[in-house]
Image (tube, rainbow, N blue to C red; front, side, top):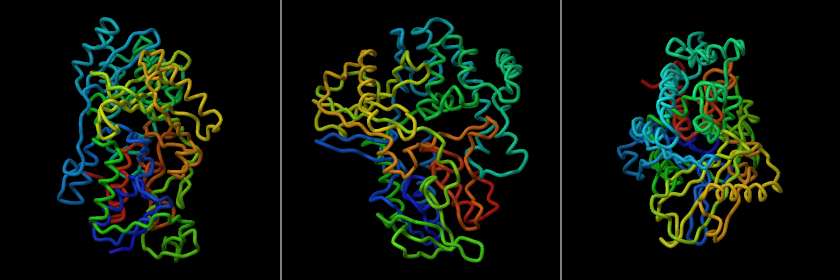
Length: 482
């Protein structure tokens, strides 16, 4: 079996490391910072604790599979997964609001009809039904198989045809939009406007991709599949915060014999006889290996030219006086008149592990922002986000005990991504512009894992990319999960 060096202890790198160790390889992870998890971090102060990266989980089956394949203990034996009752409460600029029940299409339709008027639920449901076609057509080549240059797979992922394939079932306006735009295909914002015919429904659809770091004005129509996935498979929370998932994955790696070297930045990949032969560390020492897995993002050795993709995020952590009001949803999306389709996310987990006592509460405000946002812009923007929560009637400002503002510079320090950019999900369509580089690189023996490689960003994709790399190391002709 091979000696393997994994560069970066992010979720994708650790997912690859655990699987490779189980396969019998000798695996060492070199991480430039002092801890694991990549963007999945925690900030703690005065008895309060906050997730500073993702706060909710979709498609937990990815991590269930990872834990089943790497040990006897199931994921649920290591962390407590809770399906939140409300996917999100949307507060619109006209004062209306709607809470969407989690993973229940019928209840969602009823809630939308009651809040936004008769017919709103059916229009939303019809849109998601059409989005299901994009999901079903592209799920396997986009998420479960290595990215290959074979015409059938590539054409399906690159062309904009996956979504409008349902034109016979009523996408007449979309057909006209396609003709008007030529081969480029419609954007998600155009589809939302033309098909949903209600600015609030359009804001919901656009917001589902905006919160994942994609601009609905440029994202292809196939991005509607992201809303379909959330609606169909549900949204989950990990007790103690998402950092507990990183803790569990790190523990699984250690149990399988993976060694970790923290504060050990890698300066480059060593080559010998035309293939990867290990890494050179920043201190000038060398580590020999037959396989190198670059999981540290576009700035890491082996990064493949995706450093300018995606946005970063501004996060405001709020320590609040007073008990969390009964019935408060875990997630609220505050839609803003000055930025249609670009809502502010407010997370308010009901988790005693994150607060000093029941007389206090935590809240996290998150907004995608350009990578490299100047530090002097952070505080005024944070103040504006608090004002948006006031306008939405959330009543947070008067309860603030203290707040911590985290900027793209903080994200860059933790992940190494230039400008603190966060990789968004990979998408089909758009002429292939929303795909990520394949996991095998141009150098034999060097593979890319993590959100900056196929299949892209997000916690589920991080777990999937680990499976991709492990499968390809074992067999270069590996065709993907069954």
